[in-house]
Length: 191
Image 1 (spheres, rainbow, N blue to C red):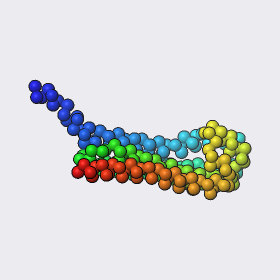
Image 2 (image 1 turned 90 degrees about the vertical axis):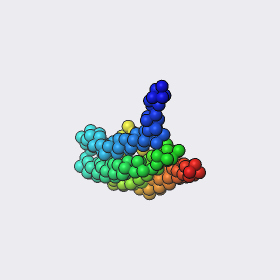
Image 3 (image 1 turned 45 degrees about the vertical axis):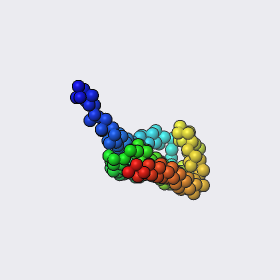
Image 4 (image 1 turned 135 degrees about the vertical axis):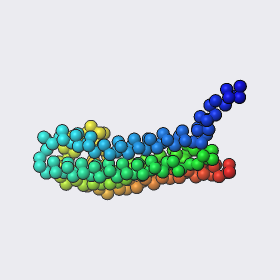
């Protein structure tokens, strides 16, 4: 009878230790990393569809723009992959609050990714689009993706994008640190 009542104890211990949460978070980071590495190639396929309606200078500008996205994709891949390896060390088996630090780390990493992407891609894209591509072509390109606020600013986007990126970065970091602090206080109080 005792075996009957303790049959699922190993599974319950697995949940209580937090391993059931750390692995999926790690997989999510890896999946996002791979998506970021593949995104520039999807974008290249999409850009090639516009090449027949562009002149030589505009095609050169689109190639430079794609190189910006390629570099951002590689940066993003490395960021998510690096953070994926740290997920396993965020909590210990003795912590009662496991998901909060994991979620805070996800929030922080998302903010680092989005802030960096907006700052770097936004500024360089605005620069290359302003120099090499006709504004009417820009509006046609980005009509399909909701316009993109930074792309619509032209030369001002070069200055605005890094500011937006920094504000995104610091906002997400602040929210993540609040969640981490609460979890840390709760885990240390229990001990």
